[in-house]
Length: 232
Image 1 (cartoon, rainbow, N blue to C red):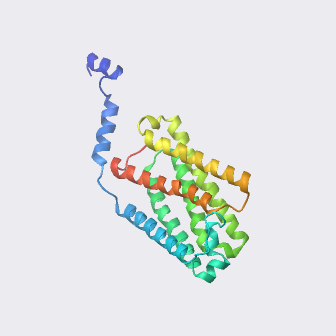
Image 2: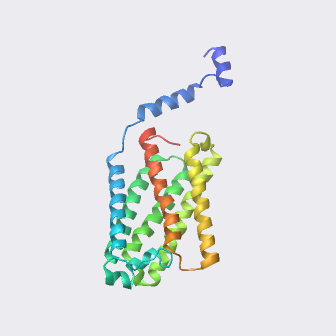
Image 3: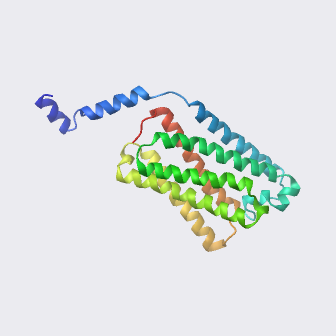
Protein backbone atom coordinates (compact mmCIF):
# COMPACT_ATOMS: atom_id res chain seq x y z
CA UNK A 1 0.00 0.00 0.00
CA UNK A 2 1.43 3.36 -1.02
CA UNK A 3 1.95 6.25 1.39
CA UNK A 4 -0.57 8.34 -0.57
CA UNK A 5 -3.22 5.63 -0.20
CA UNK A 6 -2.68 5.49 3.56
CA UNK A 7 -2.96 9.26 3.83
CA UNK A 8 -6.20 9.34 1.84
CA UNK A 9 -7.66 6.48 3.93
CA UNK A 10 -6.77 8.14 7.23
CA UNK A 11 -8.32 11.37 6.00
CA UNK A 12 -11.49 9.54 5.03
CA UNK A 13 -11.20 10.53 1.37
CA UNK A 14 -11.23 6.91 0.28
CA UNK A 15 -12.46 3.79 2.07
CA UNK A 16 -10.01 1.62 3.92
CA UNK A 17 -9.30 -1.88 2.64
CA UNK A 18 -11.37 -3.39 5.44
CA UNK A 19 -14.33 -1.15 4.64
CA UNK A 20 -14.10 -1.94 0.93
CA UNK A 21 -13.95 -5.67 1.65
CA UNK A 22 -16.95 -5.39 3.98
CA UNK A 23 -18.92 -3.45 1.39
CA UNK A 24 -18.05 -5.93 -1.37
CA UNK A 25 -19.05 -8.84 0.86
CA UNK A 26 -22.42 -7.24 1.61
CA UNK A 27 -22.98 -6.60 -2.07
CA UNK A 28 -22.13 -10.20 -2.90
CA UNK A 29 -24.60 -11.56 -0.36
CA UNK A 30 -27.33 -9.04 -1.10
CA UNK A 31 -30.53 -10.63 -2.27
CA UNK A 32 -33.68 -9.28 -3.78
CA UNK A 33 -37.11 -10.01 -2.34
CA UNK A 34 -38.17 -12.07 0.66
CA UNK A 35 -37.00 -15.59 1.41
CA UNK A 36 -39.47 -18.46 1.65
CA UNK A 37 -39.49 -18.38 5.46
CA UNK A 38 -40.01 -14.63 5.46
CA UNK A 39 -42.96 -14.98 3.09
CA UNK A 40 -44.41 -17.69 5.36
CA UNK A 41 -44.04 -15.32 8.31
CA UNK A 42 -45.71 -12.44 6.46
CA UNK A 43 -48.50 -14.75 5.31
CA UNK A 44 -49.02 -15.91 8.88
CA UNK A 45 -49.26 -12.33 10.13
CA UNK A 46 -51.87 -11.50 7.50
CA UNK A 47 -53.87 -14.63 8.33
CA UNK A 48 -53.76 -13.87 12.07
CA UNK A 49 -55.05 -10.34 11.41
CA UNK A 50 -57.90 -11.76 9.34
CA UNK A 51 -58.79 -14.06 12.23
CA UNK A 52 -58.68 -11.11 14.62
CA UNK A 53 -61.04 -9.20 12.34
CA UNK A 54 -63.43 -12.16 12.35
CA UNK A 55 -63.29 -12.22 16.17
CA UNK A 56 -64.31 -8.56 16.24
CA UNK A 57 -67.10 -9.25 13.75
CA UNK A 58 -68.46 -11.98 16.03
CA UNK A 59 -68.47 -9.65 19.05
CA UNK A 60 -70.67 -6.57 18.42
CA UNK A 61 -70.66 -6.00 22.18
CA UNK A 62 -66.89 -5.39 22.21
CA UNK A 63 -65.71 -1.89 23.21
CA UNK A 64 -62.15 -0.68 22.58
CA UNK A 65 -62.31 1.53 25.66
CA UNK A 66 -64.12 -0.72 28.13
CA UNK A 67 -62.83 -4.16 27.15
CA UNK A 68 -59.43 -5.79 26.94
CA UNK A 69 -58.64 -7.74 23.77
CA UNK A 70 -58.64 -10.95 25.81
CA UNK A 71 -62.35 -10.38 26.57
CA UNK A 72 -63.01 -11.62 23.03
CA UNK A 73 -62.02 -15.05 24.31
CA UNK A 74 -63.79 -14.70 27.66
CA UNK A 75 -67.20 -16.04 28.64
CA UNK A 76 -69.03 -13.58 26.37
CA UNK A 77 -66.61 -14.43 23.59
CA UNK A 78 -67.34 -18.13 23.95
CA UNK A 79 -71.07 -17.42 23.66
CA UNK A 80 -70.74 -15.06 20.69
CA UNK A 81 -68.26 -17.29 18.86
CA UNK A 82 -65.34 -14.83 18.86
CA UNK A 83 -63.18 -16.89 21.24
CA UNK A 84 -62.06 -19.50 18.72
CA UNK A 85 -60.97 -16.82 16.26
CA UNK A 86 -58.99 -14.80 18.81
CA UNK A 87 -57.30 -17.86 20.30
CA UNK A 88 -56.29 -19.13 16.86
CA UNK A 89 -55.11 -15.63 15.92
CA UNK A 90 -52.81 -15.49 18.96
CA UNK A 91 -51.32 -18.89 18.16
CA UNK A 92 -50.76 -18.08 14.48
CA UNK A 93 -49.34 -14.64 15.30
CA UNK A 94 -46.91 -16.02 17.87
CA UNK A 95 -45.69 -18.73 15.49
CA UNK A 96 -45.33 -16.23 12.62
CA UNK A 97 -43.24 -13.89 14.75
CA UNK A 98 -41.05 -16.82 15.80
CA UNK A 99 -40.38 -17.60 12.13
CA UNK A 100 -38.92 -14.10 11.78
CA UNK A 101 -37.05 -14.33 15.07
CA UNK A 102 -35.33 -17.61 14.19
CA UNK A 103 -34.07 -15.88 11.07
CA UNK A 104 -32.91 -12.89 13.15
CA UNK A 105 -31.08 -15.22 15.53
CA UNK A 106 -28.92 -16.62 12.72
CA UNK A 107 -28.52 -13.20 11.13
CA UNK A 108 -27.25 -11.01 13.97
CA UNK A 109 -23.72 -11.69 15.19
CA UNK A 110 -23.46 -9.39 18.18
CA UNK A 111 -24.35 -11.04 21.47
CA UNK A 112 -26.39 -8.07 22.65
CA UNK A 113 -28.66 -8.37 19.60
CA UNK A 114 -28.94 -12.12 20.09
CA UNK A 115 -30.12 -11.36 23.62
CA UNK A 116 -32.75 -9.06 22.15
CA UNK A 117 -33.90 -11.78 19.76
CA UNK A 118 -34.12 -14.32 22.60
CA UNK A 119 -36.36 -11.86 24.48
CA UNK A 120 -38.46 -11.50 21.33
CA UNK A 121 -38.78 -15.28 21.07
CA UNK A 122 -39.78 -15.50 24.73
CA UNK A 123 -42.47 -12.88 24.14
CA UNK A 124 -43.75 -14.85 21.14
CA UNK A 125 -44.02 -17.99 23.25
CA UNK A 126 -46.08 -15.99 25.74
CA UNK A 127 -48.15 -14.57 22.87
CA UNK A 128 -49.14 -17.95 21.47
CA UNK A 129 -49.66 -19.23 25.01
CA UNK A 130 -52.48 -16.70 25.33
CA UNK A 131 -54.24 -18.69 22.62
CA UNK A 132 -53.88 -21.90 24.62
CA UNK A 133 -54.70 -20.20 27.92
CA UNK A 134 -57.47 -17.66 27.16
CA UNK A 135 -59.25 -15.46 29.67
CA UNK A 136 -61.47 -18.34 30.79
CA UNK A 137 -58.44 -20.10 32.28
CA UNK A 138 -58.15 -17.40 34.93
CA UNK A 139 -54.83 -16.64 36.60
CA UNK A 140 -52.77 -18.60 34.03
CA UNK A 141 -53.94 -16.21 31.32
CA UNK A 142 -53.00 -13.25 33.48
CA UNK A 143 -49.45 -14.54 33.92
CA UNK A 144 -48.84 -15.25 30.21
CA UNK A 145 -50.35 -11.87 29.26
CA UNK A 146 -48.10 -9.97 31.67
CA UNK A 147 -45.11 -12.02 30.50
CA UNK A 148 -45.83 -11.10 26.88
CA UNK A 149 -46.10 -7.37 27.41
CA UNK A 150 -43.08 -7.22 29.74
CA UNK A 151 -40.86 -9.31 27.42
CA UNK A 152 -42.08 -7.35 24.40
CA UNK A 153 -40.91 -4.09 25.94
CA UNK A 154 -37.62 -5.54 27.20
CA UNK A 155 -36.76 -6.90 23.74
CA UNK A 156 -36.34 -3.36 22.40
CA UNK A 157 -33.68 -2.45 24.99
CA UNK A 158 -30.73 -4.57 23.69
CA UNK A 159 -31.26 -3.21 20.17
CA UNK A 160 -31.37 0.37 21.44
CA UNK A 161 -28.21 -0.19 23.51
CA UNK A 162 -26.46 -1.79 20.52
CA UNK A 163 -27.39 1.19 18.37
CA UNK A 164 -25.70 3.54 20.83
CA UNK A 165 -22.64 1.44 21.69
CA UNK A 166 -21.73 0.52 18.12
CA UNK A 167 -22.94 3.76 16.49
CA UNK A 168 -25.41 1.85 14.33
CA UNK A 169 -27.63 4.90 14.20
CA UNK A 170 -25.09 6.48 11.85
CA UNK A 171 -25.68 3.73 9.27
CA UNK A 172 -29.43 3.30 9.74
CA UNK A 173 -30.92 6.27 11.53
CA UNK A 174 -34.48 5.31 10.59
CA UNK A 175 -34.47 1.91 12.31
CA UNK A 176 -32.67 3.29 15.36
CA UNK A 177 -35.17 6.13 15.79
CA UNK A 178 -38.09 3.71 15.38
CA UNK A 179 -36.70 1.41 18.09
CA UNK A 180 -36.20 4.26 20.57
CA UNK A 181 -39.59 5.82 19.83
CA UNK A 182 -41.40 2.46 20.09
CA UNK A 183 -39.77 1.68 23.44
CA UNK A 184 -40.69 5.14 24.72
CA UNK A 185 -44.29 4.83 23.50
CA UNK A 186 -44.73 1.41 25.13
CA UNK A 187 -43.39 2.67 28.46
CA UNK A 188 -45.56 5.80 28.38
CA UNK A 189 -48.70 3.87 27.42
CA UNK A 190 -48.44 1.49 30.34
CA UNK A 191 -47.39 4.17 32.81
CA UNK A 192 -50.44 6.24 31.86
CA UNK A 193 -52.69 3.16 31.81
CA UNK A 194 -51.66 2.00 35.27
CA UNK A 195 -51.55 5.50 36.79
CA UNK A 196 -54.85 6.87 35.46
CA UNK A 197 -57.02 3.80 34.91
CA UNK A 198 -55.32 0.95 36.66
CA UNK A 199 -55.75 -2.67 35.64
CA UNK A 200 -57.21 -4.29 33.61
CA UNK A 201 -55.94 -2.42 30.53
CA UNK A 202 -58.12 -1.28 27.66
CA UNK A 203 -57.88 -2.74 24.16
CA UNK A 204 -56.61 0.62 22.90
CA UNK A 205 -53.54 0.58 25.14
CA UNK A 206 -52.87 -3.07 24.29
CA UNK A 207 -53.05 -2.59 20.53
CA UNK A 208 -51.13 0.70 20.60
CA UNK A 209 -48.19 -1.12 22.19
CA UNK A 210 -48.45 -4.33 20.14
CA UNK A 211 -48.70 -2.73 16.68
CA UNK A 212 -45.25 -1.01 16.85
CA UNK A 213 -43.79 -4.35 17.95
CA UNK A 214 -45.21 -6.18 14.94
CA UNK A 215 -44.21 -3.39 12.54
CA UNK A 216 -40.68 -3.55 13.98
CA UNK A 217 -40.43 -7.18 12.83
CA UNK A 218 -41.48 -6.19 9.32
CA UNK A 219 -38.91 -3.37 9.27
CA UNK A 220 -36.13 -5.79 10.22
CA UNK A 221 -37.32 -8.32 7.64
CA UNK A 222 -37.30 -5.70 4.88
CA UNK A 223 -33.88 -4.56 6.00
CA UNK A 224 -32.53 -8.11 5.75
CA UNK A 225 -34.10 -8.61 2.33
CA UNK A 226 -32.18 -5.57 1.04
CA UNK A 227 -28.86 -5.98 2.83
CA UNK A 228 -28.38 -9.73 2.68
CA UNK A 229 -27.48 -12.13 5.45
CA UNK A 230 -24.41 -10.45 6.92
CA UNK A 231 -24.81 -8.24 9.96
CA UNK A 232 -22.74 -7.32 12.99
